[in-house]
Image 1: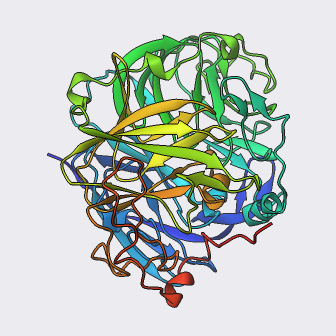
Image 2: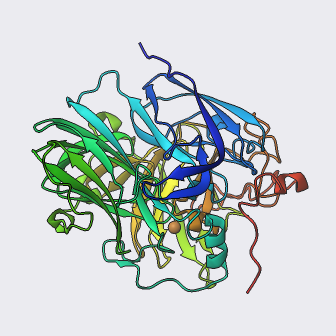
Length: 493
Ligand SMILES: [Cu+2]
């Protein structure tokens, strides 16, 4: 019998939080960074009251959950942002077990402290293990080198990318900026989080990348690890030395711990920086050096081709395909999906019950972690039934197939989880049936925060197409104000 999670209050507020040696002013849920760990059981209900004590509107998005669209925290799509002083009760079922997280979905707020883990337990957990640790990774600048909004403004004023931030693994430039710190569970490497266990214990690690702009390469010194899940869903276990985790992705792994104190390193891929924690199983072992060179980081690395969904998680074969081309405008700071920006987004139209294949075609010069709300898709190639995921990394010049079963009607965001790219336009819509007319769709009074124009274009290359924007064109000035201009238009250069 599923047990409902106890109700939790998320009080979004300006706060001073300690990163270990250093205290910063930021926006957080309560005083803690990450926000409180929320636990539920698959099939159960999560109840969370958002209290907005911020000076700006905010929402909570439950990343990866196949959720009731009214509870998705996607401003302009499924609900209005909660205004300063307001509250919103998030109450929703969690259908699938696994490792998830929650975060604000307004503007750059996710690059502050507004995120936390959401762990959904399986009442029939097939894995046996002795204990589990949750590892939330982040890149941090807030309160140190200005705010994330300042960083975005600097990027918007520039057309350059930092060519020194490179990774072969990701096919070129990895990110837009180097954050001053990289964190494990809110702590810097000089005052690291310590996970205390005992030798011989079999431990499940749940790793969540909550960063805005940083992919991490993760390894545990002195151990090989068995990857068991990605994005909440189980996969056939694969033993590796290290794995890459993009923003918005999650990986679970199992490891039997040896005796000692071991570095848990999350190398900021291509950025010459790292997040660091310690896994300690004996009291006497010396604490590992935070700059230690780990051979595991250069060892056998997980690839998507290693991952296979459990048979019962296989999706039906798709009946049709649409292409989503990812691009960059010559400005260098506008990122497109099917040549459109977030303020006039592409819309993939699906019909309830069908399975479609989205061919992601990255014609832009950077990799992107693409995230679909409300669904988990399946990666598929020739002769390969890959993992179920909700966030997938795609390199420049790469094409990937993601199959989606349309079983959760609504208007859903489909976007890059590099927060800077998202704010620079890389946001589209995955919607059921004809585009909803004007405002008030979704049964929850949600306003279209991007204004009326272009609310519902179908622009999948081979989609149903043809209802481009009809019934979607009621301009709404008030909606323009709705959520702090997250999709403001750019001046022409
Ligand atoms: Cu991107």
